[in-house]
Structures are given as structure tokens and as C-alpha cells.
Image 1 (cartoon, rainbow, N blue to C red):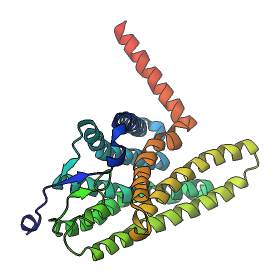
Image 2: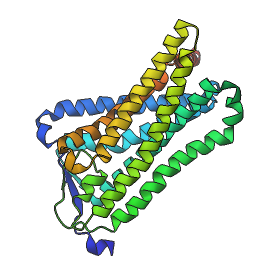
Image 3: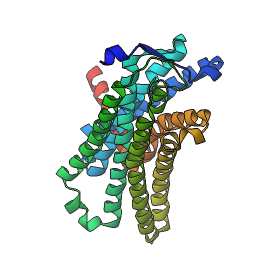
Image 4: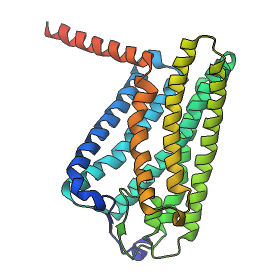
Length: 316
């Protein structure tokens, strides 16, 4: 049934069409961003996995987030760089749907993980005496697993519905990558129900986690204000504000791209908002959540020193 209905075998991505003359600069920019993003997140993941000092719920969630961001960047950036490098803007139908499914699933999983991480910090700061009792091993493993399940199961339903749509009209997509609403516009059938379903699903998996995250940080900030030491307050506010900036960028651009009715939003604004939340959060994650953390920096330094010492001993 699917093969008979689908006449289009590939899509053409036009996202960089208006600025394609700057492709050398774009290639360099995306290469640097991709390398820094993947290497930074993988480095944090390796520390969390192999360093026993990070065997805590907070770093367990951070390891999950870093792995997610590395997968996220690996899913989007290589195809973008390749398209800019070769000038080949085409992507096969199967590859396009696979990219969208992985991308969307990771987006929802990240919404849930950010919410879980803020809840973990709320318990640690506002209810320290109950933290160990509430955040047991099975609890934080279940919270992380639920975040991943929510993402991939929810988008599996949308993927199954998407596969039922016939694509027999134009195949040019005005976007940087394969995304939900640009894909729907290329179907030669009525997609109003699918568009409404996408908006509802985005609202369900974006707004509640966002407000829960915001509520957690309100309580955290209130607790920080009660810290008697000005140095302690300044340090806590520095970390907390950085987290809030990342959360605001991620959720703000996400809600702009998926929850504002398309007729009320210019196409260029939609494209740039999608570029914002696909590039900034994965890039900033290692710096905001980890590399500004003294414990993480000390662990990095110790592991590098140990590695260099081991190599020197082997040479001698």
C-alpha cells in the first residue's frame, strides 16, 4: 500500500538556498560546531561512565543528556555538511523519515530529561534530608528510561501515521533538515489532522516539562536566597542562571517552531528558530552543565595527568 501511494523517492532541501554563496563559511562553522559538540559531550559521558566519583543521580542524568546531545548532533550535522560541501541537496525518502524520527524522538527525550534534572536539583537543594530516600537507584534509572521511552514511542506513532500519507506532489522542502511540518506540506492529501496532532503532541511533551522545570528553579532560587554566604549565593546563582539560559533557548525556540500556528509565523522565522534549538543546546551543554563545574574540571585534569604519566612510564 505504501509503495503504491508513494511516488516521490527523494526530497530536495532548500534551507540554505538564500545564503548558499557563503557555503565555505557555513561548512567551517558546522564542522567546528559538530566536532566541539560531539567531542565535548562524549568526553563528559566517558567521565560519568568510568570515573567512580560521578556515581550519583545528577551525573547519571548528565551522562544521559550528553549521550543524547552527541546522537542528536551526529544525526543532523553530517548530512548538512555533506550537502553544503557537494552541493547535493537531495535526500532519499527513507533517510529523510529516519532523520526526522530520530531527531523528533531525541527532542522529546531531552524535554523530559531537562525536567528530570531540574527535579533532581530541587530535591538536592530544597529537600536534602529526603534526597537519598527519594532518589534511589531504581528511581533515577526509571526516570531516565521513561524519558527515552516517551521520545521514541511517541514519535513511533507519528512515524506510522506519516508512512500512510501519499507523497506524489512537489519534493522541495524549505528547511535545513527533514522536519515534521515541512514534510506534511509535501503530502498530496489532507494533513490537517496530522498537523493538529503534531501541535497537540508538542504541547503535551513541551509545556508540562517546561513549567515543571521552571517551578523547580523558582524553588531552587528561593532556597539559594536563604544562603547566608554571599560567595555561596553568587556561585549558586551563576550555575543556576546558566542552566536557565539553556532551558529558555531550548524551550523558547522549540515552542516557536512547533506550537505557533504556521499562518501566523513567517517561514524564515520558523527556519531560524529550528536552527537555533538544533545548534545551541548541544553545543552549550558541555560548558554549562559540566566544564564550569569544579568537580568535573578536577576529574578531567586528574585523568589527563594519569594518562600522560602512563604513556611516559611505558616509554621509559
